[in-house]
Image (cartoon, rainbow over all chains, first blue to last red; front, side, top):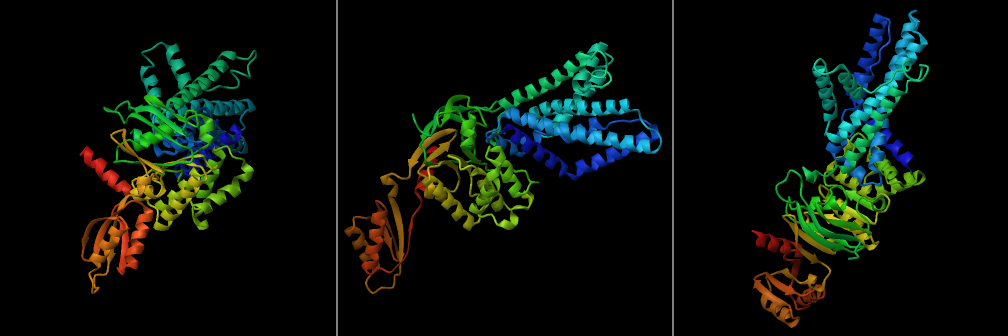
Length: 229
Length: 311
């Protein structure tokens, strides 16, 4: 039963996001510009950061602001199930769209006789996948905490704060701050290496799990009623 | 306490608010009862309903529904809710919206098409609109869709916040019929509405809430509930004054004459039977009755008197 509820919430989220012409328009522009940059620079890049932020903006906060979340939470749905479904929806959509863009770039480059090594493609796909799911967990946490699309605003504020304070704090702290706000993995540096680099893997998994646990905790404590304003 | 819904010493204070939204609210609602909430805007009715739905957490006291806390999943499986502000997923079609909530309610997918179709028909939403995006729905259509959503899974507990708001007259009648049927079927209904006549027609009891506290609970099914003043109007062109005949009939049937003027009179009657007897007596006595109506509803009188006391 939980599986069908998660799937229903994921489908509803995808359809809601993809029903917005603005989201589709931005994705098409991003994809086209990435392909053009790849052709010009002869190297792959992934739009995963922008796509995750666009797709994830207000993924919970908008449901809170519109009042639809109150209706969902009167159903026999665990709030943790809702949080997981939103994370999976954002992660799968952002990674799917980003990975498609990477594959398109690779195909275009190959067709122009500038084939990209397979390991580089795998690295880029792995980064798209892990950053999409990692950043989505952070966006879902922020989205539970702040209404509307304040989640993206909060993320931008924190990342700017890191940039601003970068030169004033120890390098290690700045790196950890960045890893926390941009949780991702590269295939060659972790699973592809021998022996397997467990530290970044565990660090990534704990960041994602921590964000989802905190998001569930915050969702469980969240009060929902238009009377509460 | 052993009611279907038990509220004991409920208090709710919002973090940023200076005063309590609810203070020491206690009541018991029986299984199968239709219970109304009435009161001025900002009285705490919606807060009270949100606490009963487990969407707001009480600051003091507790609520039990069927012996369990409101946020227990077993309670949620047996609960339906129609919010006042219908901000549904506007991009969805009405049918897709009900399909989603049918799934969220944990009901079998194999029953989905049949049950959703039956609900759409029950609330009178025209089939032509079933596959239209919700953003194209009128307020009345939204209300019908909202009620269909609340009825998914045949809930034993139904919480309705202004269910007939914005609905056309045919819809109001249909809603009343549905609520009456549900009440007869044993569904416990909590109804928040400003429409006093609607509440009076369907509710068994009504609580008057003001400033976060229950001031009064009126039992509309008690014997004294029938007591009212009837305003009767008749043709005043008879040779013998109809007023004298009307007064005589009223005295004969032990109804109290409140006042009589040419062409109309007001009579206090104890119950429906006495009202019917009085009207029959007037007609049989040669009074050309053209209209008879209660002077004002019982809830209206209650609301006026309670509001007057607070003023």
